[in-house]
Image (cartoon, rainbow, N blue to C red; front, side):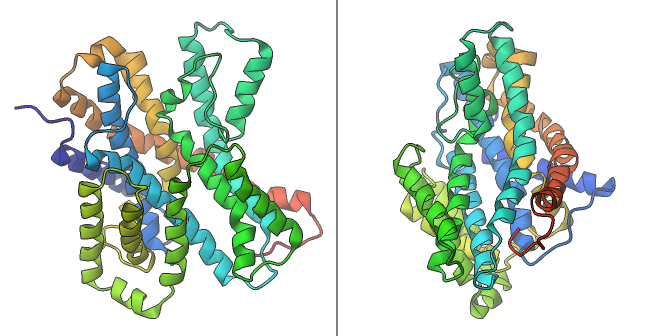
Length: 395
């Protein structure tokens, strides 16, 4: 008897292996950052990124046989991708809205924030896109297929975090699929970052016109060509609401009780089982309930705050950017599309499980040697930009 494509036990085993890989890294001497106020969120992020990997593995199985890159027909496996992204958006909105709420009026350092965001997101993104370009050029015969002006336009589109959609590479129209098309989320993240001064103004933490004006313009870009879908912005609203709700002493007290962990599990399970889209308003509302409790301190019976989970959380961005490239490398370039298309669902799952340890290990190295050094560049860049000015809050 074979393993079904949308097998929950197989998916559960994949998650267990991911946690085990992080546990092994801890045993080998890797240590996550000290648990902070939002340790549960730190642990949550790693499981979310890994869920996207499981989601895209199932997408690949169908793609190999139909040529169609489409969402899984299973609600749960579709939520592994969409639900994870929706909660990522909530995390972004929660953390930055909380920073704004904690800041004094007029003390928000927007230059520092944007330099910090660039040094945080760009290095690993640049590496992943470079690998994607190498793959695309190999698929196009190592020969330039488009005029230099078009090639420059493609490079500019990728350098701009695919704000206007993922462009081709050397004329390869579906190049973004080499990366599992994950970059679609980055314009949403950047739209939110640029909207922060407007949010600060609404919360009475900012009054400088130049920053509020910039934020207002960025919001307007949603309607002027950034190709963002309004429903996919709803999770950011959920994260903003969570930033207010999680400050309640009563909510934090309940979040520490075991019953809160039960509520988190049930809410997420019900949403993932019965709602196919994570951006349905009802799904966003239900995920927001679970997220508020996690943001307020629920550890889901200790799962999210243990050392291995927090270490897995540190690999989040690398897992998110690299998992699609790893699947492409193995399925397209090593095994071959025709051979992989002939495999049974059981064989496909065995490959997925076999890739868990390499993915987590590679992502940890990406975090340690690419992401972390990039983050450390921010203070030096700021010092070079304004040598006579002290750095304010809001990193």
